[in-house]
Image 1 (cartoon, rainbow, N blue to C red):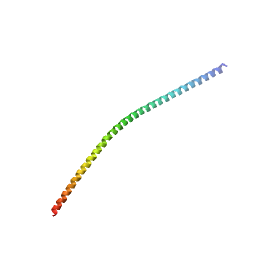
Image 2: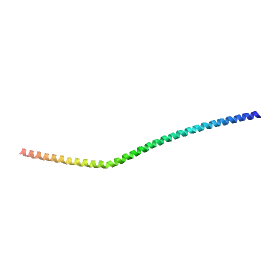
Image 3: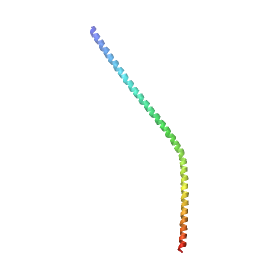
Image 4: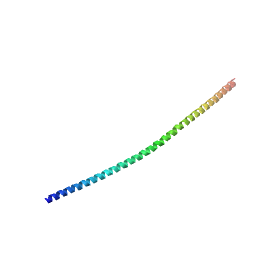
Amino acid sequence: MSQPYAAHSQANAAAAASASASAAASTAASNTALLKKERHYAALAGQLEALSSSMLATRDTIIIASEQAHYIRQLGISQAATFMATLDSVTRQEDEQDEHRRQHDAQSGQ
């Protein structure tokens, strides 16, 4: 009876060692998966931080652009007024020259 008991003990010991090795391998794989997940989350956190920084810079740029839009509008109004005044002056000069030519042509035709 001692031989079957010894064989049974050896079988149990081998099964326990196999289960222990399997559990260790499973734990190592689980730890590796957790480390990969943590690295992935850390990379995502870094990307979100960069995105947040870019969004803040974009917000600041938009604020500056909105402040400058008022000045650009005033500049446009000023340029339009200058253009219209210049156009009026040029048109008056051309009208005066045309009138002078007509008077000159009328006098030379008589």
